[in-house]
Length: 239
Image (cartoon, rainbow, N blue to C red; front, side):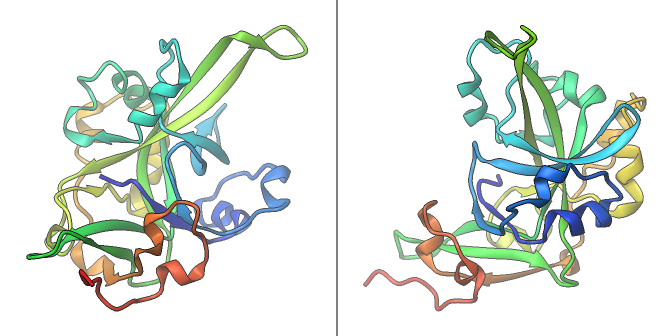
């Protein structure tokens, strides 16, 4: 799974990297987040009205049919193998696909003979952002309306996970699906409904793309945030 990641590249640079339009409000007060957690707002690249955009969506997909948006806390990840089957994901898989940028992500490795798990940070060897494959959805809150009397809308997303490559497999049995640049147009195209071809994009990224190192257990607490969280640390011990 992917339950925690870091996003440190400024939004204007992300917009340029992904060729996306950027709302002005995203630039103002933008700060790096070294401990992104579920239900927080996350940068999302998506297509709307034929235009590629970068915005912030609620992390944890809320299906359009949900009665309560809290259901999103259980939908931070979607399994690549069952996207076309699950009621929560088959509609967005058909026409609401997105990319969730991340500069790195965390997984917790089991250490033989120890109860404590070792947090590991994974980033790209070339320093570029990851392009996590994702899905997005719009949920309308019928109990709250805007100034025009229209239901308030919640834009939410989920990160797609699949089998790990051989390097990540040493840490965890799942990993985010990472899309190379030559697939972005195909993935984001809302007029593309070739689900078999889209499914074929959801493969493990090459092992040589990823570097991994141990980090401090400070990352375990979502209240901790700062560049020290991604710095290489001594392995955890039971002491």
